[in-house]
Image (cartoon, rainbow, N blue to C red; front, side):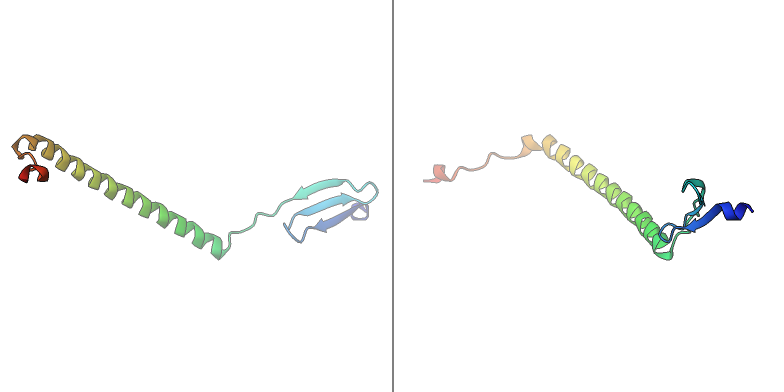
Length: 93
């Protein structure tokens, strides 16, 4: 008897199951089926995780490289007094 009063409608796109009143057309109940992730989705997630790991590794290497350059720059600044003044080519004439 209750089934005569309602229609069961399934959306082909999102797989939502709706219980609709025949007389008024009002949706009485709606059930959204949780979609299971596809293999492509899982592979994309893993690839994104790998990219994040690679980025973190590259960032760490760049920090180390910058620290080495800073050390060399400081050492060069300390030894600047030991360097001779450059020869001006116009003075050689």
